[in-house]
Image 1: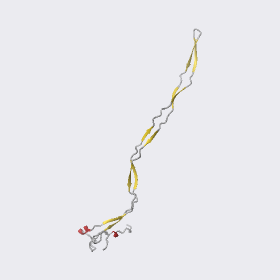
Image 2: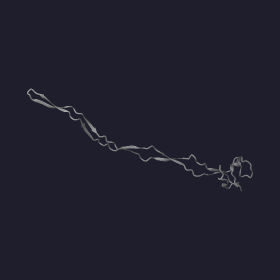
Image 3: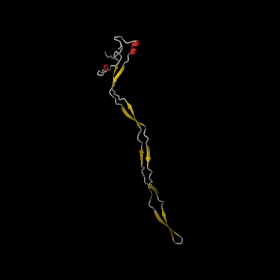
Image 4: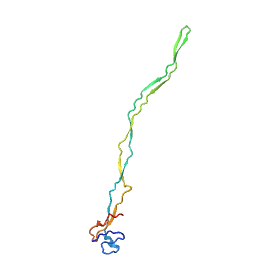
Length: 155
């Protein structure tokens, strides 16, 4: 018995003639593709949800303040009274005053939960194509002949 690998135009392996398969005889031919391929490693990349970060600050420290003033500028003024006595007073110029506070720095940080990610897979750009051959049953119709699928031949 001889194995058959069909190529167009298909011939009927169930007949012992070389006639072209037409009509109802072709329906009896049950061939299948046999392929051999090396495993392909998929390219994986993470796809993550946008981060959900929050800013957390410690309670603001109370600033320390003090009052700063200019030096007093005063003089004594006396007025002579009719009785010969003097009426004296201390007269001061208005002072300049301001409130001075330290500038405490707030203590804040960004807090983010771990990212929620999934993997997305895609075929590599240089994936090798599988080697395939069409294999048909032997002429007795009982079994497929894989010996006809010779993968040593480059396509």
